[in-house]
Image (cartoon, rainbow, N blue to C red):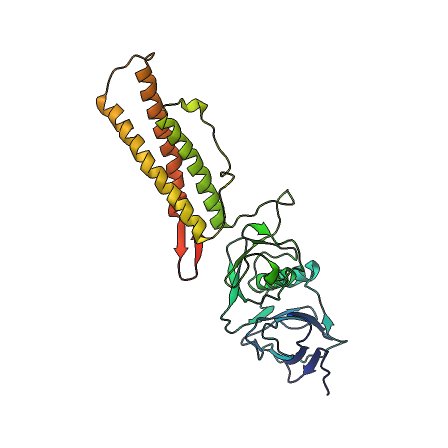
Amino acid sequence: MEISSNEDLFCPVEPGHFRAHFAGKGSKLHCCRFSFSQNVSPFFGKAKIDAPTDDPVFAFSFANQVIVVLLNVTNLARIKVHIDFGTKQELEMIGEPERLATIDSVTAKAIASQTGKFSLYSQKHSPSFIEIVTVNENRFKLPYDPELTVKDLKLLTLCFSLHRKLQSTSVFHLFFLGLELTNDFVKLSEIPRFAANSVIHVAHNRGNAPDARFYSRHEENIKNIEILLRNASECNKFSKKNINNRQRERFSEPPLDAEVNESFRTFGDLTERIGELMVSYSTQLNRLADVLDKDERMCPRSRKYQEAKFVIENTLDTARYTGPMMKNFSSVRVDITNNRFNSN
């Protein structure tokens, strides 16, 4: 059989095996459906994918179809994929292989609803990668290629979700540094600050507002620390100035100028501000200790009584915010090997 340079073909070999030839030109990501004359048996035993590339290759079987998705970061002109089903089933293809733009929701649901082993995945080593983090903190790595698009990442995210049997849908919202990547056709090279080792977070919905901010688990933790720090700092300020705590504003959002992201610089700045609060708070704790140590009887209508009352109330209010703040702070895990954070 002569194989043209611009088509994808299926080559039957021994039972339970097939080889697909993909033309590598034109796209970094290839998705192709092969249909057979009968339902395909689930993958079994030592089923595997053999491909002459280090890039990810997925195979999904359902009903009488097999869908192959492969990433061609290495820019091979032709890619030969050999799939061993681990069975002895005779495979007779009907029609021509069908190029797909993506795996639609109906097909994804059909794949995910199966029992048994319905997917295969093959990838060797890539020195440069990006990391995808799903809603439930499942993580997987992809080879980094600046020519990949947001749409490509969504398809690969779906493939990993199906392969790992995670909650999956054909509709994914991807977020980088807290902002949603809304343009499916933008290349990774065109996204500001995006580079190798970047982290993408996945959500299945974007909330009620079209520009809603999505926070990863670590970013949500940082946001909570910022809110608690803002309130604790306000309590401490009122304590220093001997002001009635009833006049103090309560905050439910971080300061407008606070950055909430996964950078080490942002976390370092937050840590420094916590330290500054603790230094100032120690002075107010000393004032509180002095008030309690004197154990004076005061006239409720006296200025001295009011000042002591405000010191006690505001200093203890500060503690009510710093307690949960430090609990959140202590839950952060710094992975200096991969330059990332994890929050328990």
